[in-house]
Length: 84
Image (cartoon, rainbow, N blue to C red; front, side, top):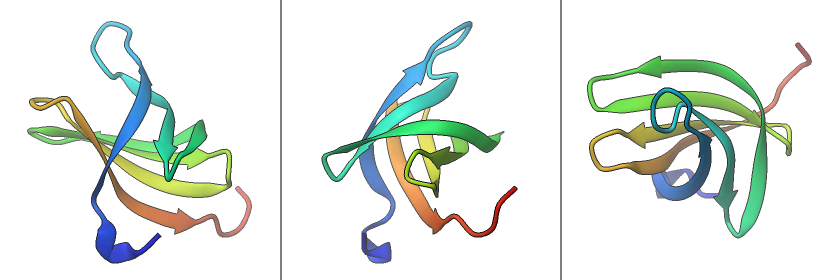
């Protein structure tokens, strides 16, 4: 995936508990479903929620959800380095 193509709109399956899109469970990227193995970090802005997730392909993805438009975007992809 080319870095200049980010952020990129993506489809995300999310858990909705006491609020909508509480956390991502899986996402579709380049016609492949990626399961979220772990949420590494999360933070909340004025309009967006951010989720740094480890996926089943051992890569780390930064996902962004726009609360007002209900749209998900892929912001960044990192190779998983080292073991934690």
